[in-house]
Length: 109
Image 1 (cartoon, rainbow, N blue to C red):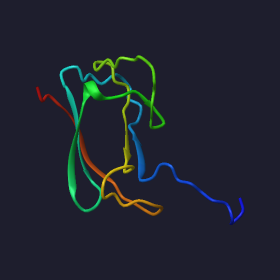
Image 2: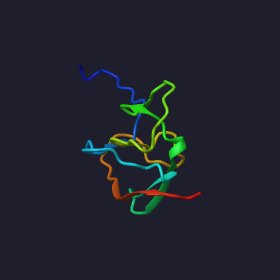
Image 3: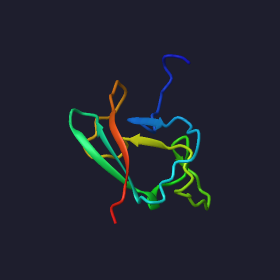
Image 4: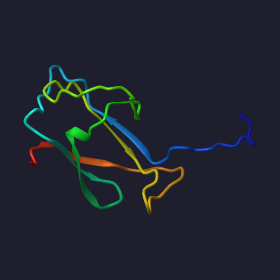
């Protein structure tokens, strides 16, 4: 690469988190939501993801296949976090910090 090369960043503010591979299945069949408490910019947030909206992904890209998740046979989870297109998000190169306090399965209905 020469110093004259132009770089175009299409994705920014991205962090991918993945659980270790579980020794057995995690049974989430009794729950309908994954919740997590996170801190990134000095403030804490609680985010929820309904399990029926959880999408199959590979390397932070949604897999375009007709797959149905079996909540009774979870073997691992990943949570991509992306600041792209978020109003007021700080963008561009640089360090960032994201802390996950907890991740829980909840029954909300």
